[in-house]
Amino acid sequence: MKIACVILGTRGDVQPMVALSTGFIKNGHNVIICAPPENEELAIQNNCQFIAFGPSPQKAVKEDGHKMKGGVTAKISPSEMKKLIGDQIKLLPGLISDVDLVLGAGVVIGAHTAADVLKIPYRLVIFYPMLLGTSNNDPVLNRMIFGFGRTMFNLLMKGFINKKRLEFDLPPIKDIWEHWMGENVIVACDKEINEVNKGVAFTYTQTGYMQIPSKDSLPDNVEAFLNAGKTPV
Figure 1 (cartoon, rainbow, N blue to C red):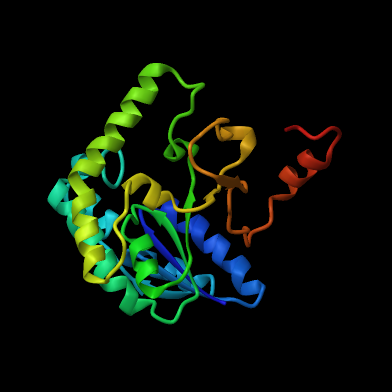
Figure 2: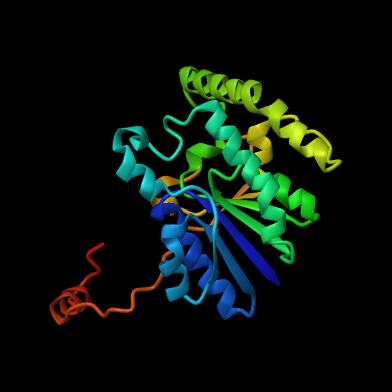
């Protein structure tokens, strides 16, 4: 199988996807990492094919650190968001035309439509369960805030996405968040640290965090400490 990992985010989004990709490669699959250009060295070091795709968060931080405070999309304008989504829908099908599966991570809201254009499956990988939304067990205020944000996102972007989908004779979507999440979201964080709340609206599988194995051994004194007596943690 050939898999495209499409990522728009910082190193924290890209590195665990590279870790996942190394597992795919060991099991005989081919992987293409499509991510901002500063991640090429990381991908190549781990034997992954790499396609530079999307704007560079690293460059944006250097140009305007305050704008990036709070995350990749913290202060992005609706027009900038439309460009991100539009580029993903327009460009990705040509870049990954021969793949069998699209795995998205980060702000890849157009990746599901790109997969639909190619008539292949799409799955999203997330690293913090809050993206799955709230449940009936959450405080009312939290549910209201999430619901308001979801409604506003649909008002601003759903018509734009459906217009793009129409260009490819694809059916319209009903909800952007549902489209972004897709079927059975992969939640790549440890249950012991951040378990998904029961009753969230989307189906998911929580796998635990995906980490590239270190190539360096621990110092002798650390190994001795860990092996002495009862496990410390």
